[in-house]
Figure 1: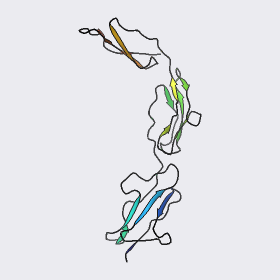
Figure 2 (figure 1 turned 90 degrees about the vertical axis):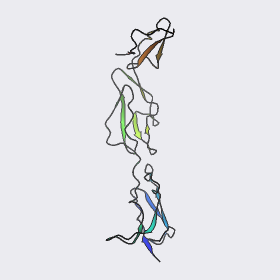
Figure 3 (figure 1 turned 180 degrees about the horizontal axis):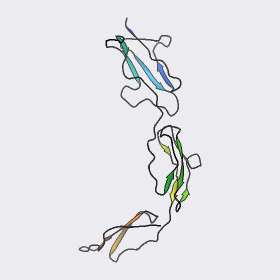
Amino acid sequence: YAKCVSLPDDVEEGLSVLRSDRESVLVPFRENVTLKCSNNGRQLRGTATSSFRQCVYDPKPGFPEYWLSGSSPGCPRADCGLPVPTPGAEYGNYVDTRYQSSFFFGCQDTFKLAGQTDRNDNVVRCQASGVWDFGDLRCEGPVCQDPGRPVDGYQFATSYEQGSEVQFGCSKPGYILINPRPITCIR
């Protein structure tokens, strides 16, 4: 009966190859092995066949006739991607964006550091889930005064902090603003 040679476990990456017969390194034709990542912060690649390999018959010159389908499995570290910019913030250097990477969160001169990460500090870490732990860290900037509203008009603003914009409009039908550009709070 035809069989494939199983894949080895990779202890360093936390890859486990589970076979129906744990004692044998051979996998019967058309049977699957299950792939699993057991180390925190490491996940199988998100493809349809990333969690298993099947023993298939596919003869090619220089290769065995029976082999386990798919590309070589792996458990890469979760990737948080580039951190999203935060107004007024300065990020310290970081080597990469994968699980257990970190950087210091600081603020520009005219801003004040507020909040903290889930570890009660200002070191942002890439978590096992693939998300940066910013907690409620933020940089609070200088605040401009409320510029008021035009007569028979309205104001649209989300904040009066440095760098934020305020827009205006007319409430009365048939009226238009003389200068429709928004104003910006600057230092």
